[in-house]
Length: 233
Image (cartoon, rainbow, N blue to C red):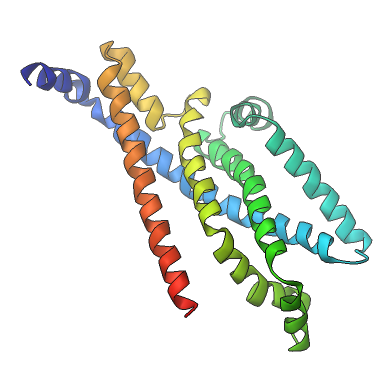
């Protein structure tokens, strides 16, 4: 126990090294939160365009063009590693020295997540019976209103577990932010490791913090699922 206490003191207390983890955790949460928002917005837009194209008997030229753009976007994002996308964003696209590393990370992870969210939501929309759309139109709702008030809420309930899993994956994927020199949670643990030459305690602490966050997110999603199920009765 004395040896562990000494190791803990050297790793986290000396020179206030614990602050690397605190700052890193804050950056990780900020990147994840805003990337989730961007991913949801992009995902919903792409999913609606793709599902509308599939459901239409004779889609117009604007819909065909938008669907083609969405297909290219999905192919590129899902066909290349996230870490490569992050490096391209930082070293090729956002090359200005005034650009924040946090902003680069948020945009990159948000755009990346949007591709996976889009396919998840599209599968949910396509699973809804076509009679739902006909019922909405017969009530006097236009296409957009029917999608927003009738189709999307039902699809959201169906795909909630898959969406939650995507956001958990996104949270863990932010651990590669260190590739662009950003002090995220994983980078914070690695800085302590390089300063103390002790790989065990800093990295295990990082792993435990990630585990706690994932378990907390899973519990919140579970409560939301139960509420949604109870609202159906």
